[in-house]
Image 1 (cartoon, rainbow, N blue to C red):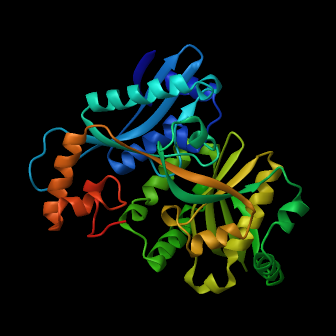
Image 2: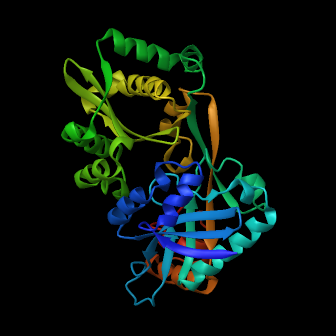
Image 3: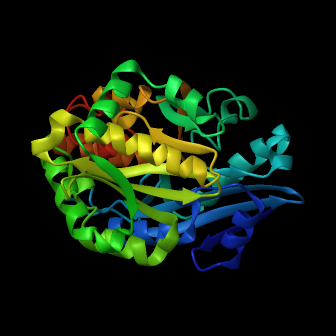
Length: 361
């Protein structure tokens, strides 16, 4: 078994992606972009044994912000925004022995790098069978996501759409709303205005506000034709916009929003309808809409489920690679929050030492 830690400039990163079906969230360019946004170091661990390999990309983050006390050099590992997950070769997926050994090696390597915990968001589509091929209890169930099966005919896609959405789409068309795909770079100002207005309306957290003008400009420059903007216009005014990525037959619905004055029209329904037919015509297999916030059931997930009957399990991998350092950080965080350490450890938040509030879930 051969193990390597590689960075985004390594040829090995691209070699693995050429061999394995992947998504936007696995690209080294995307990890570079996310590393800049989050002030973390993008890396990946590659474990190989013949035709079997496990590829785990991540962002390496310092833990010096946990407490106002000095902390020795300690790190944790997180996923970038989205669903990067872990990539396995077909041979690896058929070998329980390799998977077990590779997971032990992954933990060992991370601990050797002074990493005390690791949090990976799995890819709902590409990692669909991981709960079956990995040992029981390896992953945490975080809910469901929704995707549109673009292999269906247009009439089947329409029939799988909730009646309320169909009525809204038809109403938008009658009112003269029109959707189209446009270059992000040419509409960046309109997109940012809508995005920021939407984030303010829904009370989005700090992490969503870190997707700023420069981030999206860099995204267009770095990812190029893999990024597409869908806008909805009414009398030449853009009332709704959504950003989509396209890699290896998978289209992801990512960032977007609607102007406050047009929320009642629900132009996002027309946007999604147009985007799915556009994606189908380009030969893609999935339009992944995602789920609710944190994978939960909320108004956002309810909206998405109205476009398709296809569901995916959303799993996360939560590893404590150095229990002693993990416990130390939890104790420091509990002291800062003025609560008991055990209370913090019993919360659903992971890693527990990054909990922001008492009783964090």
